[in-house]
Length: 174
Image (cartoon, rainbow, N blue to C red; front, top):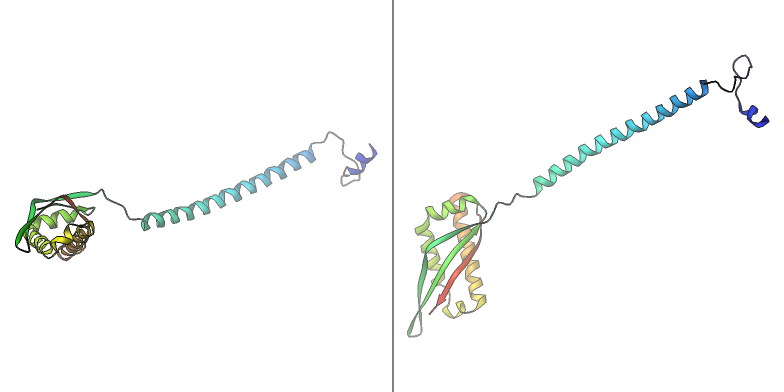
């Protein structure tokens, strides 16, 4: 008990307050509530500032990622028939083509310039060696050449390309 009495504080007159006084407890509660309030304000301010930066970073990330539109396939009808002179024999190639794109303007450009595009496709196919078209590498080279040319035509006529691939849906050689 003597140790406890040494720890008690005297008031201004030198009197020891009674044990049941609530003055110390009120001050302690006010100090604890004040400290908790300061911690809550600090946490709230930190969260507010960091969430604002996260939104800015998220917006930048969204702007950096392009929005992909669904794939569209433009069927070039009717199929293309090309003849080749191989030695003394006449050979034929019949190809059905579809153009894969995500850009809506590609279909409009392909339909509007159909005669020119069909002429260019036939010209490109006849420039290929017939024996090369028999191999997978030759067909892939033809696909790449057609894709590059059609993308160039669309870019020239519309201002931007958009042809992703030219697909063979039918490829018959005789």
